[in-house]
Image 1 (tube, rainbow, N blue to C red):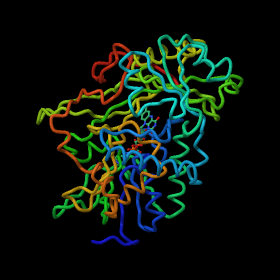
Image 2 (image 1 turned 180 degrees about the vertical axis):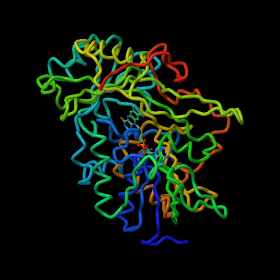
Image 3 (image 1 turned 120 degrees about the vertical axis):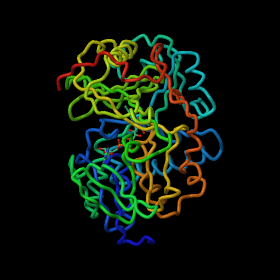
Image 4 (image 1 turned 90 degrees about the vertical axis):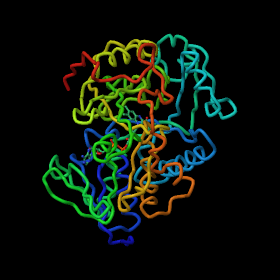
Amino acid sequence: APLSPESTILIVGAGTWGTSTALHLARRGYTSVTVLDPYPVPSPISAGNDLNKMLEFGDIAGEDDKERYVSEKLLEAATQGWLNDPVFKPHFHETGCIIAATSEEARAHMNSKDGPSEAKGWIPLNSKEDFIATMPKGVLSGDFPGWQGWWRKKGAGWVHARKSMESAAREAERLGVQFVAGEKEGKVDGLIYEAGDVKGVRTADGKQHRADRTILCAGANAAALFEFKGQLRPTAWTLAHIKLTKEEAEIYRNLPVLFNIERGFFMEPDEDNHELKMCDEHPGYCNWLTDSQNSKRSSVPFPNHQIPKEAELRCRGFLRETMPHLADRPFSFARICWCADTPNRGFLISKHPEYASLVLGVGGSGHGFCHIPSIGGFIADAMEEKLDPTVKECLKWRPETAINRNWDGLQGRFGPEGSNRVMDFQDVKEWTNIQV
Ligand code: FAD
């Protein structure tokens, strides 16, 4: 049926993209929007339920002119949201960013044509002293062995992830969107297929939710709900927090984001609990399981509020190079965090070519959070069939790009020696044992 303001619309997943989509649909005047999720916002398994995420304006990427056009268009919309939308603006911190690399290969990648340069306003960092001078005295004390990098003071920084997501959900709810949460009531088990179309979903409590349009925004878990023909590779990364004292947190305020593309990154500690979050950098973990019936191998997400011991060691190695005075401090929190990579790390935002009422908003590919102000508008455009033609073409359903996919592909990511590969949770012998 053609869309009208009264059309019933179901969104599967109240995570980063689901809350954004709910907000945009409500702002467009849709009056019957329901979002299903096993958890109330912020879901503990949402990749967006996190203290902070990086954001860099104009960080355009792409293999060709079309992809670069789309990257620019998406980032431009997100930037407008962070700068102007009252729902998101309070959560953006324009503290600048530092990008760095160590090995020759990673440096070459960092300094490729889309990379930082003095012409684009970046300040080169070539010595330990250069790095240390980017932050207040006492923050950085490491040797930065072999580091080369760049510093950008404006047009970049971090966003408070959880608060942005909660803010989007709150505003969507205020505008009339209904959120259904619960491990039975909100957990989608499968789609309702009828007459060659998708007519809604079934939830774990056995209930059928019928709708005129179904929008799948279940992040890394989307691959378990629909056959993506290899277009999504659920992949996890690792993060940890250390607690700073109130006095330390004072010194650590308004720091630029520091990101070494093969070591890890951190942002300033959060203002509520003075916790400093860091991620160790690597090409990710899959969780490879083989289906006994058809011998098909797939990476299946699972939650864990611990990280592999080897990730802890990487985090501490990163701290030793940058802030050795914190390198042995116990972690106050850690988790694995799942995202889903497409073969080219471009998003997948499209109506399904066969199921006319199914819309897909997936494939965050490790860079989907900073789009929360605007991505829902593109997903709504896909539903309303009015996406910009180039955006539509680049983000379309594209199973042909996943034929003979290299499941171990690094996809442009790096890690320290020994971890410069996609790892498998099945091989992990030891996990942290952090008591929260
Ligand atoms: P999610 O936010 O994960 O949402 C999925 C939702 O689906 C969840 O709420 C979940 O509860 C729900 N769900 C799951 N199963 C079901 C079901 N059966 N039924 C109903 N609902 C279900 N991006 C950046 O832009 N900048 C960064 O600095 C950055 N850093 C990152 C660091 C880490 C460690 C990770 C893992 C990711 C990072 N990202 C970053 C990527 C970004 O977090 C993701 O691209 C983005 O959050 C994906 O949003 P999503 O809505 O697709 O998935």
